[in-house]
Image (tube, rainbow, N blue to C red; front, side, top):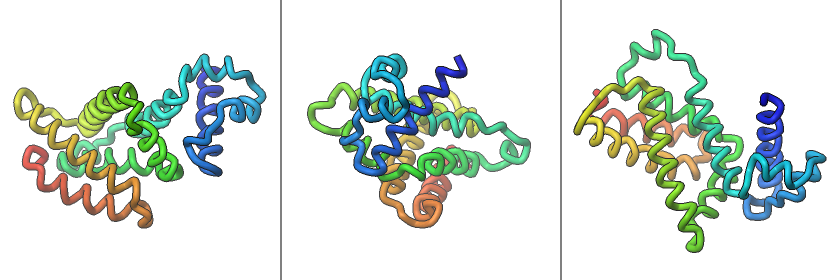
Length: 188
C-alpha cells in the first residue's frame, strides 16, 4: 500500500509541476503518465477524474495540519492563537503552488461544474471541522454552530486573500487572519 501512496503522490506532484509550467487547465494526464512511465489506467486507479487531483491537493494541505503533534505549548495557547497557527499552516503548505491553486478554484467555479461546486461546499465544511479538531476547540451546541459559521467565514475570507497574497510568507493574510480571529468572541 505504501508504494501505491508513493505513485499517487508522484502523479499529483507531476501534475502540479506541469501546471506550474503552463496552467491547471492545460494539465494533460497523458503527459503526466508519459513523464512517470505509467499508463493512463494507472492514473485512473488513483484519480478517476482530473478533479480528484484537486481534491488530493487540498487533502495534502489538510494532512499537513493533521500531521502536527499537539504539544503542551500549543495546547496552552489561547483558542484564537491555536486556530491562527492551524490555518496558516494550511495556507503555507500550499504556498509553492498558490497560482495553480487559484486556477484549480477557477476551474471548479466554471458554470458547467455545478457538481464540483457542491463537492467544494462539502470540502469547506470538512476542512473547517478538521481546523476545529487540530486547534482543540471544544465548544458545543448552539455555540459550536455559531463558531463554525464564523470560522467558515473567516477561513473563506482569508483563503481569498491568500490566493492573491504575494507578501513574504503570506504576511498580509497572516495579519488579516490574526485580526479576524481575535474579534471572534467564542475564541477568546
